[in-house]
Amino acid sequence: MKKLFAFMAVCLLALVTGCGSQNAAETKSSSSSQEPVELHVSAAASLTDVMNEIGAEYEKEHPNVKVVFNYGSSGALQQAIENGGNADLFFSAAQKQMDALDKKGLLADGTRKDLLQNEVVLIVPKEGGKDITSLDQLTSDRLQHIALGEPKGVPVGQYSEEILKKLGILDAVKAKAVYGSDVRQVLAWVASGEADAGLVYATDAAISQDVRVVAKAPAGTHKDIIYPAAILKDTKHLDTAKDFLAFVSNDKNKERFAKYGFEVK
Picture 1 (spheres, rainbow, N blue to C red):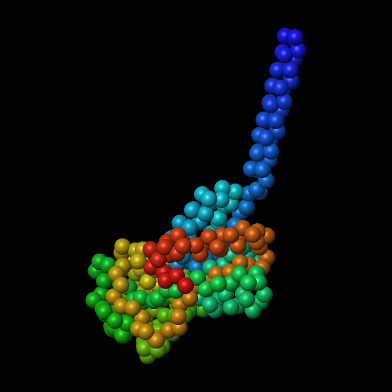
Picture 2 (cartoon, rainbow, N blue to C red):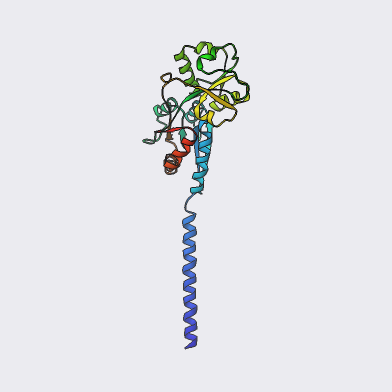
């Protein structure tokens, strides 16, 4: 009888051990079923700080996803995408670049959305900057170098020219303009004192301690500055891209955008 009980105990132990091993194997299999994903996000340079923060938070919540950002002027990013560059999502600082991709059928159907709104401001170096208080004063002989975004591919440059043309001072300002490849270069030139003044987004001015805002673009001098976002049609990670875009738009991240000075749509 004792031998029988001992035999049954051994069998029971083996059964429990086997089930435990099977459950562990199933758990391991389940956890490894999510293949690593590298999500490539092309985003306007003015989004650098907030998107880095959002991307890091997304990776914490999704350990199998690595978010790789490519920042630059919206025009340069648009051209890279048109030329087959690796991108799953595009966050533009203007509708123009997104419209161009849309017309070429490069956006995933139904994924485009207006995400944010911004405004243009006039900045000068915080220390030793020229004493100006309005955009009209950009024509003053006291200013030698005015930093603007390159208007062909940099949205803030396009908005700036629209504003200056509306004010009737575009030609005078162009005579002493230096053109940056994106809004962050414009910001850097003014912060370093290489330029006497510059036009940037309010959100870019807000992140720098080396510049001060002296004026905002008057109402009615430019069209609304809307930041659209969309998933690219050729993405190989459509579900992840949709999830990331939804994550970017959630309430917590709306607060993040607001913290950086953006108006959330």
